[in-house]
Length: 159
Image 1 (cartoon, helix red, strand yellow):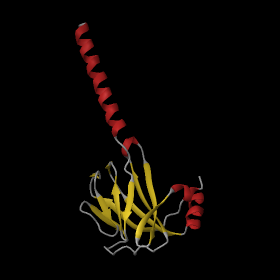
Image 2 (tube, helix red, strand yellow):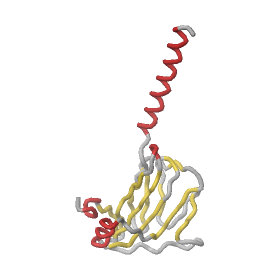
Image 3 (cartoon, rainbow, N blue to C red):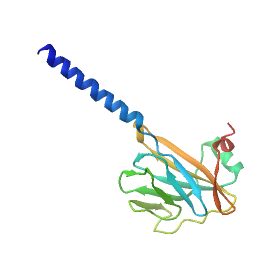
Image 4 (cartoon, rainbow, N blue to C red):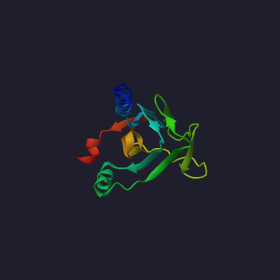
């Protein structure tokens, strides 16, 4: 094999490696952003993948701190699973409304989830496997005067 062919093949593999690395660095985990009223809207700042969505609660702050220390036992309120990989960039889901491309797992049989209780804390959790490994992104929120308000993780973890 000539030196020119070896050099061309080497260039091809280096460029391919750079492209794969750039794509993997660009991909970010999907993070939920809770806003709006009651029911709240869950928006997604980025991401793509086999997105599941869990809403758990209701907790008091003390209950949530205890559960965090013990391993975070969940109290499911609502669970959605996708029917396919789903691009969430720029999309949103309103609590209690099943969007196209998803199916409601909990509560079963199409029953509506329980209304969210003013003053209690809830968690929106998105376990996903973007970027080559499992990851869990969560956001804590409460309903305060009819509005969804984010609870900083530092209030839950004492860190």
